Image (cartoon, rainbow, N blue to C red; front, side):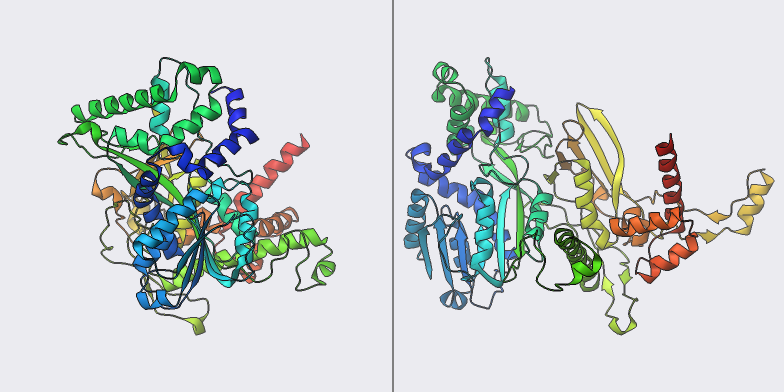
Length: 614
């Protein structure tokens, strides 16, 4: 795509056209628009809404009344799912306000309320960026697949925090990296005998990156929200036929052609022709796949990964399409009553900045960093102590459930004998679901570390190869004892080494390779591009052959925070002995650092200093 096309897509005019598409859905989609929207809500929005509601503590076990506002309500899917999952006696004491900036969507929700007889539910036309509602009015706030299309999403987020009571909860979902319809439409456009511009910038908001899980987590925490949880969810949407596809995504064709095609190109190839071409492309693509009986047939996925299943026995092969869409859920957040701006001095400890000799803005940054570290350490401690952790959330995607480990290990906190709790039983870890996607290898590794390390496991890249598309394999890092726990060598081993003229071994070194077959693969179209998870077909690759390992054997679990690493660097440059540094680190609670780590850091500093002197 040319830079001119991208500039047009991302221009205020291009974003405005996309925003108008959502606002005027009835006009854009045509006569069957309400039927299409309700069907989409049932197939896509409802499963995601259920997960979001569970994240904010609303499920079949809810016993306390609540007051919820659902912004960008669309067809009212959140309200109607609440009626289905919440106990009737709780609903009678609760209230639900559904709102949307689109008059057409408000009308759909009104008809849904009347048709389904929703209890204590009303709908209003309200702009999420400026609701005009009283502060501290609601116990829960939700927005399902909406924040990325709000023009000023920061204003909407600030408004959400304002109208939710202290201790209340905010739940939201947004599209992740690649949209469900994008791969097939892009492939169809490329098959045309003319150049058909294609762009998937489906974010009308001029603020932030709502498709980046790390950005979402960091932003919510910076806004002062607590207990922030971000989950990338893979989900399969069934598409009945190619005819259904082009009808269901009809608004997308209008937007793509209206925003990035020239007027001359639209006149030469009108919308009806383009839709017919896409339909014929999809019918041919999936009919050919299934007629070959390929294991990669029958699924159009939202990315380069293809699900391993065959549909060669389908009666109507050309009509069997499943689209894997990914969604990002950031839920369960609790805002405090008063939020100080990030650049202002916190209200508590008014003289601390002066005593530290720091400007107010640097003190605020330091305090925010300490609070973030404290929250994350608390979550890790809670995960270790409370247990009940069984790997990645299962979600709607069918992921084979591994059996419990034959001899699950237990972990008992020992730092404070007075705080001893019952041992925690860990079970085998599951691989992330197929369709799980992140923007880069480093981001994938960061997400995996958050997922695995608190559970006593670790994953690392074992190799990468280029075969059409770039494949990267993640494997179990180790099992059993930590690598730095080395047992004395047996006397017979020493004698044998001496007899063979080899150097006498001093320790029985364990290998990084633990024999565990647990692994999964990701595909990236180019180095540094989006990663898509694939499972290996054999069940042995989805189960660990060992229990959780000593977390300190993973270098990432021994990594010091930046402020502590700066002090260690200073001590090393001043000539401190490693033993003295270890004593100082342990006195500050950093007990996992190995002598080897410090020696390696010392060599690295010497190398850096030598390079600076050259």
